[in-house]
Every structure is written in C-alpha cells, then in structure tokens.
Length: 196
Image (cartoon, rainbow, N blue to C red; front, side, top):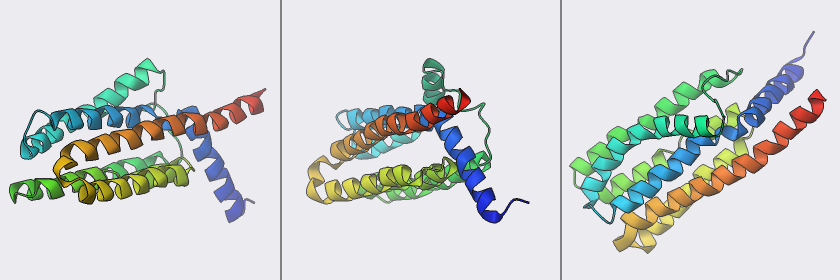
C-alpha cells in the first residue's frame, strides 16, 4: 500500500515531469513580456488613464498571443493534462479579480495606484502555478522580485512611473522566460535519459 509520503513523492514527480514537458509553460510569460513592453510604449503616447484603459483592452490579447507562441515553439500547453492542472483555473481567476481594483483606482483618479495594482496584483497566481509544476521557488521569485521592483520604482521615479514600471515588469518576465527554459530543460533531459 502506498504511504502518504509515497503519494506526495509521486505527485511531485508527475508535476515536475509536466514542467519539463512544457518547458515551464514559457509561452505564457513570453506573451506577458510583450504585453508589458506594449504598455511601456503606450506611456509615450497616452495619458496615464488612457494607457491603463488600453492596458485593460490589450490584456485580452495575452492568452491568444501565448497560444501563438505555443504553436511557434511546439509547446502545446493546452492539450497537456496533469494531476495538478485543475488548480490553474482558480489561480487565474484570483489574478483577474485585481481588475476591478484597477478600474476603481482609475475612476477615482488614482492612475498611479492602478498601475501598481496591475503590476503587482496580476502576479498573484505565479506561486500557485509554480506549485502546480513542483517548482514553487522560481515562480515565487518572479512575483517577489516584481513586487520589490515596482515598489522601488514607484517611489524612486514618480515622474517616470508609467514607463519604468512596465519596463521593469517586462524585464522580470523576460528573465523568467529564460530561467524557465533553462531550469525546465533539466527535467526534460532527465525524463529523456530515463526513457532510454
């Protein structure tokens, strides 16, 4: 009979196998990188409240863009079903619940606060996704570094918040994509070696 520890170990092994198979799901954060670069570019074209409105509209392109990247890189994360995938929809829903706060902040004339909510709040799902892959530390690092950078830039560069914060978030995303590809490669390689 399988003990609880055996079950936990088997569950972790299956989650990490999905992580290796999907290369950490990098197409999704890759689309996040592009999204935040677009938000940064919008800071040079629009007033802050308009930038945030267009950010909301553009957020609808993140998932389709991730599907495009998945097709380009042959990383079909949508068809991959693992033991922990059922946790992903609630994690994404928790992230989307930050949008009403952004809307209220914009309506109340606090576009600066809305940007902070957007930049930090929309990373709330990262630790859960990390858990689903059995790689919580790398995903938590993304959220924590992102929060610290956003907070620092908010206070250090008040006149450039709408440019520097999106650029910083895009940078964190880009570094995370690279880290996911490199880190998940170890699990993909281990699985390939085990199959031989």
